[in-house]
Image: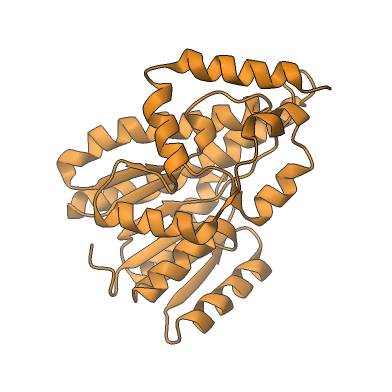
Amino acid sequence: MDWNGAHVVITGGSSGIGEAVALVAAERRAKVTIIARDAHRLNQAADRIRAASPGAVVGVVSADVSDQTAITAALERTVADRGPVDVLVCSAGITRPGRFLELDDDIFRSMMDVDYYGTLWPVRAVAPAMVARGQGSIIGVSSAAALVGVYGYSAYGAAKFAVRGLFEALRTELAPHRVHVGCVFPPDVDTPMLAEEEQWKPAQTKAIAGSIKPISARQVADAIVDGIDHGRAEIYADSQTRALARTVATVPAIYRQLFDRRVRRTPG
């Protein structure tokens, strides 16, 4: 991957993992476009990126990723302004943990709208041109919660499992066209979204996570960039999540027993 002058588009680029990816891409002299709903936060993020990499080309586009018409139009404007998309990182997302029986229906719908469809629609918009050019990289940000079912994540986990399934199928279809497709599985990441999420987590969800310390958004961003450089289909930012992915497929009962034991021991 030649980052110098490449056009890197990041949804959810106003904070967290998305902003961190934009910072790394700008350090490598890529042209960066960040997309999110809040124009004020987007401009603040763009200022931070330019301050970290003087001379960086940073564009901002305010759009709702869950609105197919809006995000498609936004990406068309982006291409007109800064050229074809070489890398798309779908980092926009929301999370709302809670017990299945206590969550409102709207929570399940919003998780799918933003986390799944908010990933699908940008991909649908840029993939045809990448295939026509025979190059490009598309990255989806899933979650460690898409590797194994976790108490309290029936809404969020289902949406992230959907992202995982989409990208596994998409990889096989686009590989013959020399378009790289990779899926990222971050654990808890020290971002504003995690801080918001904590107030809603059931005690059992916290017990399953144990004492694992959240990793930095920069660590995830570095893993994403490295995954693009090496054409990886699965991208892990930490050793624990990588080990989870390798073992849960072969011995899932161990995790079920572990999770059930922690739930039983947690009051509430």
